Amino acid sequence: MKRSLEERLKDGTVIAGEGYLFELERRGYLQAGSFVPEIALDNPEALKQAYRDYMNAGSDVVLAFTYNAHREKMRIIGKEDLLEPLNRNAIRLAKEVAKEHPYEEALVAGNISNTNIFDPQDSESKQKVRNMFAEMAGWCKEEEVDYINGETFYYHEEAVIALEEIQNQGLPAVITLGLMGENVLRDGYTVEESCKILSEKGALVVGMNCFRGPNTMQPYLAEIRKNVDGYVAGLPIPYRTTEENPTFFNLPDGGCSCHLPLETTFPTALDPLYHNRYELAEWAKEAKDIGINYIGLCCGASPAMLRAVAEAVGIETVNSKYSPNMEKHFLFGNDKTLKDHNLNYRLKA
Image (cartoon, rainbow, N blue to C red; front, side, top):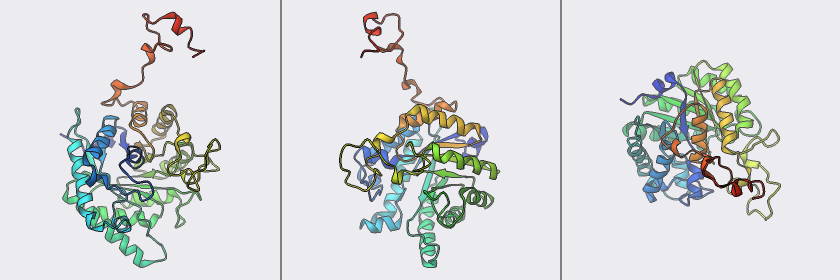
């Protein structure tokens, strides 16, 4: 019997594997810039493999890759007619993979996200956003997801609309906010104020995702945890954001030796700015210690990074058998059969 999200949260830490957007761009199946998950229709087997990789790295949930698969994004790329089939197929593929889990069938989550058309001064934009969320949440309900993840909202009011439309379908909601460089949401709320309201309105889990690495997200997660009685989520990006540059949108790379085609390293030149997996594992331990219940990584995360995060909070993953073990390495190992002339050379290699 598959446990629900709430049951898993009651039992301990839930791992949520996000990060498909950058990972699939790296694998060559998604266009940076528009960032629309056409892969759900164009390359379904590649999407299933990504789902599988994150699930086997420890994710309790297969998140249907419908981030940016809303009516506005589909309109911009001239493929609005593919909106519904893309959404439905992304969910169906996720359900297929979730059943493959060898220990316990993974959860399947629908996904709705920031629309980039929400304007707090424009009532028409609010209705458009509501309509977009309503249709996507409706397809999630019809495809029988376990819950819906509403994510990366940088307006509190847009997050509330998302929550309301998820609740209209009778589904549990995880709502996470994206905090930009001014350190408040764009309609003036602090993240802890917003999360408290969202939790009181009935979101099962509230918290933060994307935009910020562990260093610049963790202080805000701590404030959310202090202000919210329910479950709290933290899903940072795996980049070394700083107090001076708290998000990855304007993160500099002083060591770059070429002219970048864009104004910033975001989104296609962030590679030298990664945290390593051990730093991410240390963050995960800290997050668990302060009471973060729903832990994962967002844009830029690889399955190996997610596995390190899961293992750091005490979870053995399907692919933990492939976790690093240098015992047999010819230079850095300690196996008794290794050759001394190589082991003694390790510092000169």
